[in-house]
Amino acid sequence: MRKGHCRLAATAQQGQCRSAGNSPRAKGLGGAVPRCIVRGIAKIRVAFVSISPSSTPYPIGTPGTPWAAAERAAWLARQPLQRVYAEEVVAPLKALAAGLPAQAELFQYGTLDYTRLGLASYPLWAVRSRAWRADHPVVLVTGGVHGYETSGVQGALLWLEHEFGRHAQGLNLLVLPCISPWGYETINRWNPDALDPNRQFKPASPAAESALAMACVAANCTRVDLHVDLHETTDTDNSEFGPAKAARDGVAFDWHAIPDGFYLVGDTERPAPEFQRALIEAVRPVTHIAEADEHGCLIGEPLQQAGVINYPKRALGLCGGMTAARLVTTTEVYPDSPTASPAQCNQAQAATVTAAIAYLQRV
Image (cartoon, rainbow, N blue to C red; front, side, top):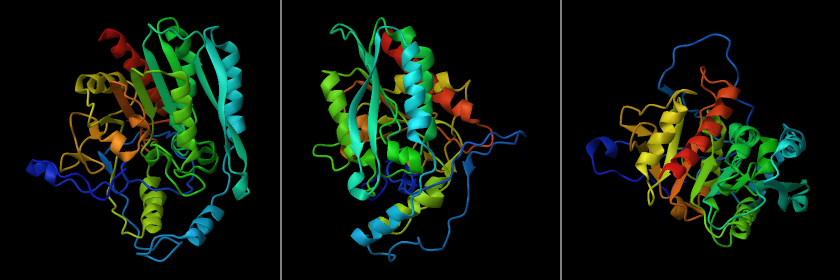
């Protein structure tokens, strides 16, 4: 997400926050192993996970030199399929759609075609309110912008299963549960072109994932009142994704510890602090909230309130900046915590969406 450096805050405490090398502002990408393992033995939680940075250069490219086509091709060749989008996302979505209320409609909004790279093409699916009413608030939920962030996808499916019908009467709903299916299959942050889709939500986007999602939203929504974008922050941001991004860009990897817990990323232009606070309180019973580090920061950004930091989403080309919604937030679930199960991760995502809708309907 970053342009190059973390914004310096005015206070001395905030000024100690380091640039977010693996934050939603700057996380890189590569293949990773599945995460969010259920732990059978309770452990004491610490605020931050401090896995020491490796001094070994990333295995692709020359340190200090940005990648060219050959390095990008070498990176792509290292990305094996590790799970199947059709089985884990599309099939459950279609089965789920059969049980959705009559107000819901499952539709294909595009095809992500990577056959030019010798890869597959992927149908992209969304669920929307069948009868769109101009007098109803519009809610957008996006998941899987980063395909490796599993609970962003599975949490969206969980919410569709249990909550869509409950909210279908008074809202216009649009849910895109898995924007980056190749990333989902290879457990990656980037797309096959070594681009981060969550930096490409902008005009003439070079990332098909971002361009197709924006086109879907534009075709279905004349406005959006609430947007919840579902993400994770993982240990692989330090072990793989951050080093890959640094190597790709020819810069040094700015390592720092990963926060243990759930947090939100608000929008600098539309911070809505009371809204963010309501979501944090709704998630507390589900999973623990990340604590600030000794500098009062999360992933290098100044803490605005408990569990909340802000980024300029439009300027950074983030998914959360693609609409003019007055209420917008990005979830960050921590699936590698010894005290968070896969079910809790998914439930935290779903709880955020439900709480966000409740707030929208109150104000």
